[in-house]
Structure formats: structure tokens, C-alpha cells
Length: 264
Image: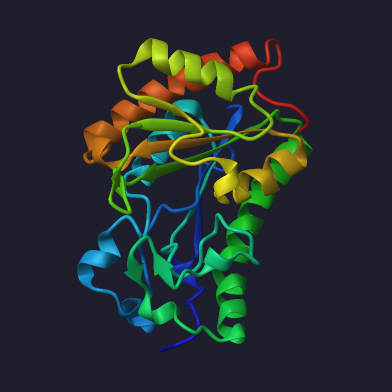
């Protein structure tokens, strides 16, 4: 199996949409793609596995792109499968390059050599986070208040357990945006809304928001949509429309008079 990710042209490991967006939000989609460069041989997985949720967050990019348009927000998204390297994990995390995802063994990640692990980090994880830093640094230079929001989807059944939650908001100690957003979601929709459900920061899923949000003093929020509720382009647009209104109005309640951020 080859050990080098292509890093030129259309094979770049990260993409940035609307980098000059002037709205108060910056969007991140860590698990936007299930792409695996041919040199990796699909990590030894079946075709079905490579399009399953273990490889990416289906629907998350579509929602993120529409949110970017509605909110005039920069969007940074990975263009590689999280099975190659998970950009939403600390580089030292055991599940950064998982040998097993949910119940599926990932043959191409078994007994990975240290130099291969380092290469994947350098060629995918590092550029992804550098792209986020570049967008946030430029906004800071311009004095633009910023709120950092990551968009994910999750599987309705995990390890045989059905999840009732249809949309969850994940937050850490800083709940300034999460609390009003939760209230507005419950008020404006009939979806089953979760608070730190189906995940919480304690599950190790908050790395990107900790590194680029909390550590910078920015207000962070993680959105999780159940992927059976976002299967069509129409559903992606519907979710984005709902969330854009909720995020905008929650921000007014969270930080009145500040148009969207702290620090910057």
C-alpha cells in the first residue's frame, strides 16, 4: 500500500469556500468527504463500507455549503475520508487513524508504522488545521468578530443501539450560543433535539472546536444532524435554512450588540 497522499491540484486535502465571507460565523466540516486516493486501495474496505457513515458524515457538506451561502460565512472542509486520518481528533489520539470504526475492521489501518502515521498527519491533518488558522488569523487582523461552528451528521443506529435524537448541539463549558440555540430549535421545529447528545466533548469529538474556538476565546458550537434526516439536496437546504435562522437569532441573544463574536 502506498504511503503518500497526493497533495497537488484537485487532490488537496482541504478546501476553503467563501474565505472572505463577512458574516459572524466561520464554519468547519471535518468529515465532509469519503474520498480515498487510489494509492490507498480503499484501505481494504468494501464499496459499501467506503460510502457508509464510518468513512464520512453524509449530508454534512451539503448543509454546510448552504449555511455558508445563507450566512456569508467562510467554510473550511476536509476533502479526505476520516478513515485515512480524522481531522477532528488530537494527533495523539488512539482513534486518529482507527483500526476499527464502530464494528468494522479497517485493514489498511492495522499495525500502521509510525512513519506512515506521521505522513498522514503531515499531509492531511496539519494542512486542514492550518487552513482554519489562516481564515481565523485573517479575520482577527480585520477585526471581524467570529463564532466557530462545526457541522456533522451521525448514524441513527450505533453499535446496534437506536438513537432517538434527530439533531444535537454539542458544547463545552462555553454555552453562550448553545443554550439559546437549543431553546430556539425546540420552539421552531418538531425534531427531537439533543443537548450534548448523541455525543459530548467527553467523547473526544470536540478537538477542532477546542483548538480553534475555545483556545482562541471564540464562542464554539458543534451541530450533529441524524443522517437519515438529511438524505436529499432538499433536506440539506431545509436544515440549513432552519439552522441559519436559529444561529443568527441565538447569537443576538447570546451576545447582544456584538454581532457575533468575542476576541477577534
